[in-house]
Length: 252
Image 1 (cartoon, rainbow, N blue to C red):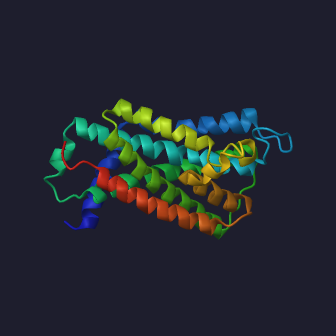
Image 2: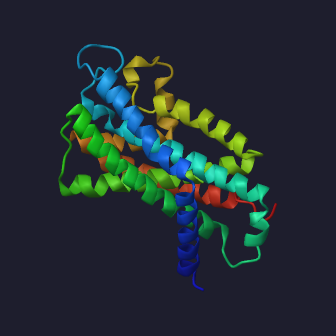
Image 3: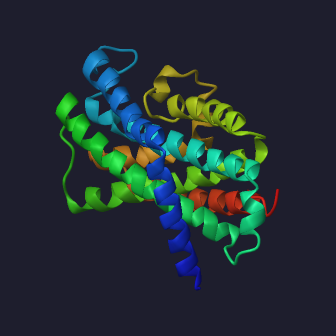
């Protein structure tokens, strides 16, 4: 079997495994919907009002997308690795031709499909709830999916690292939340840089989620350059994927 065939076989198995976990399927789509409803419909934005949510609605679209791009890969890939370790699955996989990069690539592709569908739902819900006008040109149709795919790849790699470091599924969930929550609110998503202390603002550039948020915002608002952020995100995604693949255990 070729490398493509091995990745395809693992992708199909992982896809069906995800669908069998109905609770995971439900919350993958339900959680971001709740975020949009709370912040978009209940809290709402108040431009020129000062404080949180003082920007136009389009400013926060990257934040809504970041919820699924960040949380889902971290928890799913990390939990899968922890579950495989507990079930001695890596010992069995070590006897097959499937390599660690191929295994992680298959897991990443499943997440790209799942989160891509969730992102489409978020876009539609954001337009419906907030009334924001999003671009429908070819650039938006190509660039935003590129940011989503690269963001998912990056955080799948980070999830693999957390799965290797944590000693159980509970440990993975705790570690992923400890990483994801600060990144979500300190990466130019929901909190604008001017609300942060001046001494902390340079640290924003060290968050990979920042480049996702800046790039998507450049497309959805029509201001800024998405290409530089896309290039930085692509480099970071490749680096995290490589380290994540090397972190996957060969055996237990």
